[in-house]
Image (cartoon, rainbow, N blue to C red; front, top):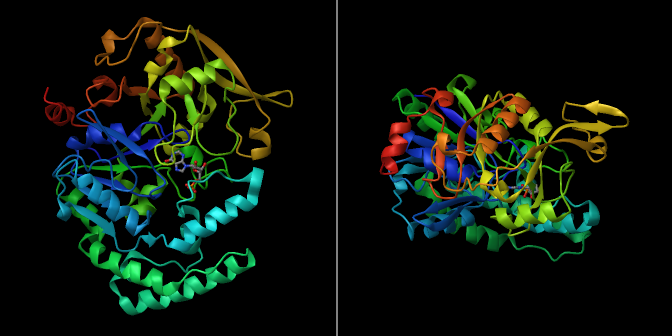
Length: 442
Ligand code: IMP
């Protein structure tokens, strides 16, 4: 069976958590390769809502190896709190959770400075989650970061916390902020070190052993392609690479380990935070999408901006990730619409753009060109077989497939695991669906 990447091909919140959780029984390991606890992966377990931030969405299946790679930034308190909360809802085997020893740590000064920076930007703020993600990656690239392995070396930990806190306090002083106490940070992180120690491992080696043993791996992306630091709508992006290339650098596996990439997209578009969003709606249709889709951020609770499906953006996301198969989520949100629009190109200064422009000055000024399709007006909610879908919805799917040049392999028709349909002909043996179905009790 294949090792596959599952990643979001819009601005995050595409519903990856449910898909990863559903497919996990077909895999030996689930591995996160970037981001941190800025992610919010919502999974429903026997009707109960579980929101995962840092721990891979395979965790709800006992027996699955859950790996957090070196490309992830770790807030140890967030990790330990999440694990503790998960232990109240399901059985967790500590020996099956591993955090890379070379992942970088988020420290209290990261979120603290980020909040000050965002406030200083005023109207131009990025709208980050303020979890310290960006500043932690800045320290990583600046070669002054503190890594998970430093937790296991008390002398190095003290020295690095004191040096970094002194440098950050100098920046803070210029902003009129009271200094942070390095002794206090050291005390907290020394405590986390003891509690984190059992999970600190060589994740790259564990991955290689899993693959060599013939157990397929699911690489789980957080955020989405359009939030990628290199390929997204810079500067309104996150500070890591959710794109498929992030798998190799963020986990220590070669590109030959990746057999396929599945892109997850909503049947419409949402975005949290600032930045250009050509198909954003400010009218009653936008309000209806937000209401029916319950569009509030899983991490920050912020209302999500909503708009029509943008085929220019999704086609770009598929191209740069080598995606030919998609997962379509939340089509049931569109059940109520008599007509549905899809953006198939942009107009800019009198010309037609079919390629996604990455210059913010252009993307902010494009006018979306829409094609309108009739709504299907029959609920697709909860449907589990392709032949049960209304003809209008099948037409919509075919239209999206044609415009983005990728096939819909999986359609999610509700939040529960069972509310999903697979197109086996499209998946073509990529995923062991019999394992998935067994876990569903079918
Ligand atoms: P950061 O990742 O906290 O630095 O935030 C940068 C941008 O990415 C902001 O626009 C956030 O709203 C967005 N973002 C970060 N994580 C997520 C996510 O999991 N879903 C959707 N947007 C996200």
